[in-house]
Amino acid sequence: MIQEKTILKEPGDKAIFSVPEGYFEELSARMDGLIDQTEQSKHSSTNRVPGKLVHMRPLLYMAASLVVVLFCIGTVLKLKSNQSDSTKLTENSVSTQQTAEDYLINQVGTYRISEYYVDPEQYDE
Image (cartoon, rainbow, N blue to C red; front, side):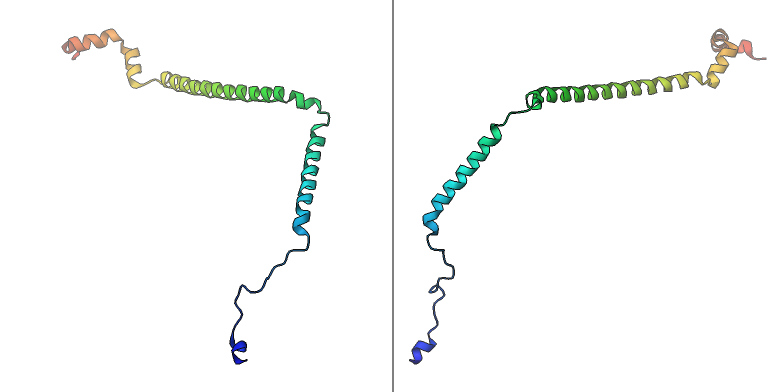
């Protein structure tokens, strides 16, 4: 008797979880019922009459993509024209500013300057 009290039960001796009676026998019938319900819901959703937009979806998608493409092309062209305008503005601003060299050439003339470089002694006074 003393030995029976000291022996501990092994951990796998007792079933912790239990399955309700008849669970596996009814499982296939319940699964078949669920499958039938999902198939019926699929058929009922596809049997309804589609609206006009369903048929026009491809056309709407093409129109939207065309608008996006035209918008992108317009943006690129606008950026290029802005860049060319900015280069024209800088070229015009440089050409309108008169430098000292431009002023000297306008006052003296290119002929006199070339004479000075050929014979500088004639201009020494």
